[in-house]
Image (tube, rainbow, N blue to C red; front, side):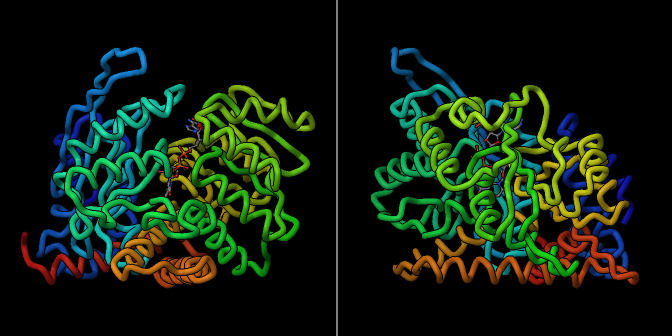
Length: 445
Ligand code: NDP
């Protein structure tokens, strides 16, 4: 396999799709060796078929604001690959959403879902809608309009979307309501549902919990754990709050959270009532980061920079893609950070990842360390199919088990002769091999 040749052609076909091209290159570079060792993969055209999404739906989403003014957003669903199960992946509502970002996320999702050991293919969708400052009624009208187009190509055995940036339980509820009305069915077509209508316990905190469970396994390989460790977290959304909760439970101290304008540093630790306070602000669509510094005066708001300049033992980037660059990585390394686990998707730039690997820092790529969210979505689908609901301990036990298995798979495929585990390679190879085998079994389609 010639990675540069494939990338040149892909660039010509998808000009300017920076995030998508970045994600594909990362995967291809780490599976190159295994592809070259298995000529049947190339003979079956697996790579060419894998980097082209099965289909993409783009649609108009018109909606009325509270003053009666008309707005039009753009909606997308990228159905990337369903070799091992129905398409599965979140919906992102954020003004930055474009096709490149959704294709990168959908592509990553194929391997992540494969790693979970559950039968789920890869997909992603969303819209450039900005929920900031919108009333619940406006969010509802937007979600209903979005579902008026999407419903036709999704289904519990076809494509099962979930949440992502800007899409939490509230938005899933509004979209589920419209799907139900249009189809006259009450089925598990979305995950992240409310507990009273088909949702799973632990789903809201699963991505953050899973990320910490994965980091815990990495720390174990160095004979240590979270007790007494200082942890820097970015963002304070669906992923970050679960991570903050679990780190605290395991005896670590979370000292930062962040938003797009800057970060909070709280040397006393961000836990307990502080997390509750921020969840309340989140539920009312309000800014979280600045009000935190007014409410808890021992903390400080640092404007315009990122939390990676703070001294910490462990970093969990949980906000968005490319939020931790080379300079941030150098800061972390120089400050003695020993482990970085990505809670977000692709938060570390390729240059940052290269530095972590070069300095033998424990580094977990998102497709492994944040797979707990989609894994628990898979568990929600299982519960929906069986028409029963597991208790909290049961779901958490399964999630924990899955994260341990993913860690094991990464070690199996990523450990070098000197004993260093390259988790990027391990995750990509393990995720890829299963999908490639399924595609070969199913013929050229
Ligand atoms: P949320 O919208 O709930 O949270 C995102 C958080 O990041 C918010 O606190 C947001 O602040 C902050 N943020 C957004 N942009 C920036 C930025 N440029 N710099 C710093 N902070 C920023 O999203 P999720 O928590 O759901 O998703 C976060 C990441 O995790 C994404 O990469 C997503 O793809 C990934 N992920 C999510 C999963 C899930 O289950 N939700 C599963 C697996 C991965 P503000 O609200 O002020 O804008």
